[in-house]
Image (cartoon, rainbow, N blue to C red; front, side, top):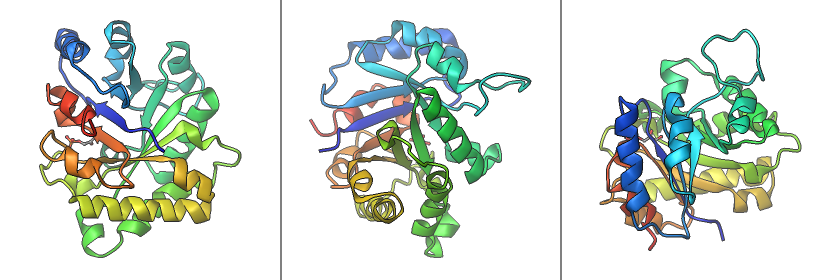
Length: 249
Ligand code: 13P
């Protein structure tokens, strides 16, 4: 069985180290289901201080990294630096990176390969826009985003990858996907991986749902057979994050 996995993507929040610290103090006191793998992704500047104070059963992720190890790449962080800092995870391909920062599927794939080769685990984000869903392209868009990585994934250890399906229309909008919509797309993603990679990888890879997940809607989503957890934005900054971690408890 696939382990239940909940990630908290803090995005560019909160606006101070002190506020980050109090967020972590709340999480440190919460009663969390030990069966859930929990990963939090603070802003890059706070990754190390958060790692130093967070409880040991919660892991830390960066929200992005580059594919080069070092060099003249102003503003970037390398996978090797994250490994050196003891950070085990990185989120790559988030829709905000793809849209606001113009990251192509090829760049996301290159970064994912480099991150895994450096020893990181990757939360690999995919998902369609509202227009794409309404024109029936959801599965095709997810496939295209995954295929760019599959094309460079020769001999990759797929246990280092967690997929996050985040429909763009559900991110930060309060419009959560129905559990049927999430289940259908997760199943399509597994079907694609079964053909493009292998049935074993399709069966073992964790697929998270992300987009307006709250304490109120997480339980039903968590019951879907192909939903293995969540990538949580806004609600990861609130005490209800603990309830989402405990969605299967
Ligand atoms: P929200 O939970 O705020 O909709 O954000 C989802 C997300 O983008 C997580 O990566």
